[in-house]
Length: 578
Image 1 (cartoon, rainbow, N blue to C red):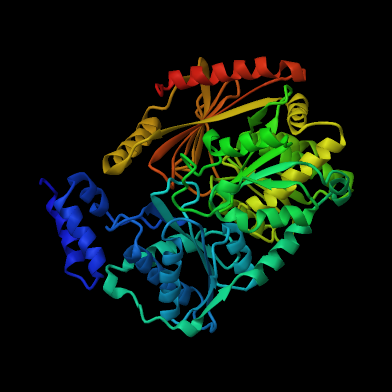
Image 2 (image 1 turned 180 degrees about the horizontal axis):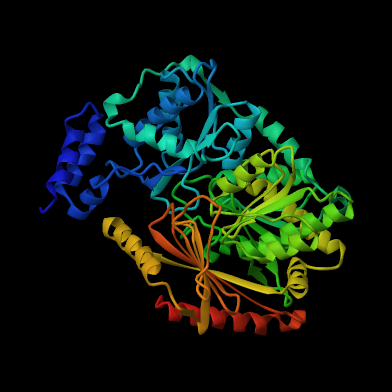
């Protein structure tokens, strides 16, 4: 074996500790086995990033396990006590999804917090991520944790931290929590003397309060009543959505909800799926087959922690097609703003929010209704932050990001697939009332505002060498930015890492006011936008492409989209990504 001494030393320290015999046996197996696997498990500490932890489950400092979860929780407990010094009755809410070990990790976190004198509200069974955000606010907690790896493959799990506004950690709490977690150097520094009287199970009471708020968001109950037979096929993809989505749709008045039965069973192995990600076409295959069989109008699928939703609608030929996150966001935002306008609710003090990689179509729609549309960095925590900053000054209507996450209303401060499912279904009922399908509604939006086409290209680079390669790619893009993309000159470079916008023609620079982030954006002469960013949750570097053209008729959509796809392919080739 040719293992680096430092890595072997880190593994050996686990064998010399007071850890469980079962954990030690797994470490010994790694030491005697595959060198690469041992290296990847111990070459670094699993990074506690601005959103928390996410990684492959297993033993090792670079894995999700009892040790890393306990150490992270001890660091969080230390920071909570510092941030709320002198305040008694500190409280934290915890929820977990259907992934393997999620309930176990939630229990570990609850016990460590209680050992540190912090009262814990622990969900009695699996619950969606947005439910946790709501619970933090409703129970006036100081922080929250949800155990989930969202849409990652089954080998992964994660640990997301929320602050007292119900949003994920933002500055200064994100870096402060990270600093406290990094101070915990070993398992022995964790307080494991759980105080079980400080742990309270929560469930149905919070469900009912949450569902009542969701139902109150409805903008057209009279239209739903007339179209209550709208046939909806829903799949929770073996995740938490099954606990609340069907109930919420029924509260809205939809009476024809068909769940995909095999995928309605929570299961961390995701046995019927290649990937539990509603962005992947394969994830909706079973639901679409069910929808074809029963003659449904709409298909919706939520990811394991039910914060994102993918949908399928019938095209002009009556066949189901998948909509991407930008298309669904456009339909949802268009429906919300038109409904608010029709009801005379727009006062000039309303806003929507999108991320820098989400379609500019949302801004075009917002401009038409004279509604503000600020951009934020990728990550829904930044949408939550801007909602908080505008409390008492402006009204948040809704927001979204291209990765299938949407929020309506402000009683939750994270993307919420339960709310999104209800209002997407309501938009479908509204379209039906007008004699349109959801697809025709989308085409009409394109005809009014232009055909915006966006796509994502990801390059996966696994392990230690992959992480280094991704950083080198970002370094090279900064040092040698492309002069042209797909034959169109690059006019503007937005470097969110240095907070500088540069005009390539004039050389003039302007500051970018958003927080610093390792993201680059190239804007070309013909209006194409290419964004490059390393993923914060997966071993990938992501390339986002956005192009646009006019659309003059519904029948011209396919040809126009084809031309835009070719344009993107030309850009991809010019970047050497094929």
